[in-house]
Structure formats: structure tokens, C-alpha cells
Image (tube, rainbow over all chains, first blue to last red; front, top):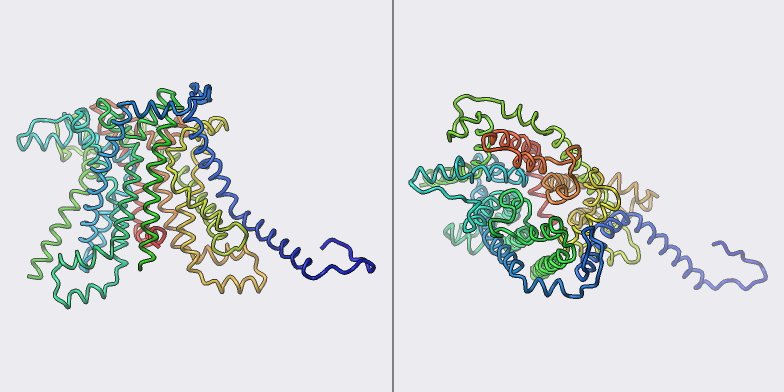
Length: 314
Length: 270
């Protein structure tokens, strides 16, 4: 309170004074709260919200090779994208890649999690082994699989010829390349998916299994009537996370196929990368990035909604 | 019957382990053979040799790449822990106008894929003169909605009475944060740290864009370099480099696996 109260002026009414202190206290608490939030907000602002806005802005402009907007393009980039066969091709490759990797990863990881979620000796070792691919970075996994796929000396063709098959150029054949990259990706992603599903399994109340056993339920019926329903939030979460990850695939593609052969593996993010940083078409690349943003935002939003509903029902 | 089931179970577990471990074992075996043996298609080395490892360190600055990856991943992890825990603390313990609105804004960032912002971010880093510098590889990744979310879930488990007591005895917010909140949240902090480190070590697109100098390149880009330069006869060298590059993250994963399993679900499901 910095106002001077002179004996002659009428005393400030209490209500005004408390309002003022309240406002000051609110101001103080606001300032203190913001001090804790500023690092996050500033970083989100500079490296997330500003660039997202800027991407939207660039998507309606023609740009020079330094990424500076030169001329308003309106929706020209988007119209061109919709008419571009290679955009549709890239969208198709991305969806096919997701379809190939996501369900397979989840099913395999779920199977592995069920296998180690038993009370027997030595499960710790198997848990560690199954989780180990999470420690494989994209570069490590890619160079190993690239060697395994090597048409002349790689193990896969060696095994193939041992059983009488003819060699396949896995990564150079447009018919097999995407499948080959998908197989490597599934292997890479099993570790994390497995860990999350195992954690979900361990959260299920063991007494539920007890009662299922007392009623004489078979293992498979128990799996379908107890485990799967109770694990469904985790399964759903893991599936959406894998889906989002699949839509953002880049590293393995750059290592293994560079989007080829004949664009067979030119998935979305790789197409954006090429358009922006190889062809310097920042405007059109931004338009593609916006499409990616809309797709991923939709998937994430649906996941939030679903998870929320799950919580309310319980 | 019971032993038959147990045996079948173990056989299945071993089969799965062989499949999962095969690529790693294969890389390890190849890295210990000389070029001729690899070309001849052997699977088991006849003469064990470390020449590929020597070559990997001589032909490429592998040590430098590893150090760069380590430093960048460490700094990203540290920054994330600090930035996320500060924000999570404010969201759980402090009351101030607009708090919930800011929280929703932080959560909304989960909707934005990093790739949708990568073009302007690249231009920003260029404008700041941060290309080919550690700072450009590190700072953009400090804020992370998942980290804030995970720690918020953890902080919420701390009894609010502790906070009220601290307030009454005149302990400031920051001291309460450092002395009480952080020590009580060790598990979640370790989870976030392990996850962040693995994530940062795995980063590929961003270092590819903002570095073209061996002094700051990470090991992922180093592997790419090595793979592009090597001809077929030096696959052993590439495999040796891959084996070395997987060691730090594998060790970290073995050490932190349990924490990760317990901690990640907390942020994910609750």
C-alpha cells in the first residue's frame, strides 16, 4: 500500500481495499506461476507454435530457395497436390506402410508380453531380451537390416537359396521394398510396444485371474474375457502411438531406400523432406506438411476423446 | 502335463528370443570377420578378428560421433527434466489466473507433429546461426508436452497437505519444489530421463538438416556417412560401427527397463 492516508481524507472503504489487495495477490501469484511456465511456453512458442503458423503461411506462398515468400499463391499448392499423382502415391505408400507395421507390431508385442507375464523362473531374462530392440537406434537397425537384405551376401537371400529359392533384390524391387522396410521397422518398434503392453498386463488385478481359474475357464477364454477387455485402453493407446509413429517414418527410409525404387517407399515425411530440402520448394512442401499435421492432429484428437470416455465409464 | 506345458512355454520363449536377437547377433558375428570371410557368406567366424573395429575408429571419427551423440542426448535430457518439472510444478501446486488455459495449450502441442514445423525451424536455426552447433541440436527439444504430462501425474500423487504445511512454515515454493517435490518423484524423473535419452540418441532428421560438419555430427548421421562411403567389402567395418553405436543405449535400456515399464504407463494411461 503506497497511498498515504491523511487524517482529513475520508478513510478508504474496506471493500475497495480488499479488492485491491486481492488483485495484487492475484498479480503476484500470476507472476510466480509464469516464472515456472515461461521456459516451456517460450520454447513452445519459438519452436512449435510460430513454425506451425509459419508453415501455414508458407503453404499459401511461392518461395525462393532460401524459404522466403515471394508471391501469394492462394490454395495453388494444395490444388496442385490434389492433382499430383505422386502425392496420392505417397499417401498410399504411407497408409500401406502403417497397415503393414502397426497391427503386426501390436500383435507380436502382445504375444511376447503374454509369454513373459507368467510366474515362472527366468522371465526377467526374456523380458530384457524382448525389450532390447528399444535400444536399437534407427541408424543401427537400418544398417544391420540393409546388410541382411543385401542381394549377394545378405543372410536372407542365403537362407532363401539354401531352401531352393532364387535371390530377391529386396530393397531394389518396387514390389518388395516397402515390405522389407516394414519388416525392419516392426523389429525396431517391438521393444517399446512390448514394454508398454507388459506394464498394462501387470496393472491387471491378479485376483481377477484367480476367479477365472476357479470357474474353470480355459486359457484362451480367459484371454478373451478377462485380459483383452481389461487391457483395451493400453492396447488402444499403443496402437495410436504406433500409428502416429508410422505416419512420421523417415530415418529407415533414408537409410534403406531413399524413397525409391520408383517412389515405392516415398512415404509422407520423406516426400516433404525431398520437396523442401532437395528441391527447395518450401511452399509446396509446407502445404504437404499441413496435410500431415491435419492427419496426425485428427488421430491424436480421437485418441484423447476415446481415452477420456474410457476413464468416465470406469 | 504341467511339465509339458512348461517345456512348451520355454521352447516358445527361446524361439522368440532367437528371432528377436538374430539381427544383433548377426551384426556382431559379421563385425568379427575379415572382409573375405564376409563375402564368402560364412555365418560363424573362422578367424576372430578386431580389424573392423580398428578400421571403424580410423576411417571415421566414430569416437567424435559417439561423444556428440552422448553430449546432445544428455543435454536434451537434462533440459527436458528441468523445463518439464518446472511447468508440472506450476500446474499442480500453484494457483494463478489462466493456469488451466496454459495447461491446455501445452497439451495441444501433442497434436502437432514435429515434421510439420521442421521447415520454419530449420530457417530459424539458420537465422540464429545455430547450424553446425550443439545448441541448435539441443534447445529446440527442451519443451515436451509428454514430459510435462508425465510429471504432472506424478506430482499430483504428492499429498497437498505437505504443500500447505510448507506454506505455513514459510518455506518458499522453489525450495519446496527442490527439497520435497523432486526427491519424491525420482521414479518418474528417471523414467523421463531414460526415455528422453533414448529418444534423443535416436534423432535423425533434425541432425541431418542442421549439421554437415563431423565435429558436431551425431552417430546416426555418422553411420549413414559410413554406410554410403563403404563398398561391399567393408561391411564388417559398418557392422563394427553399428555394434559400438548400440552399446550405450542397450546398456541404458538394461539398467532402466524396469523404471521405464512402470513409469511410462503412468503418463500414458492415467
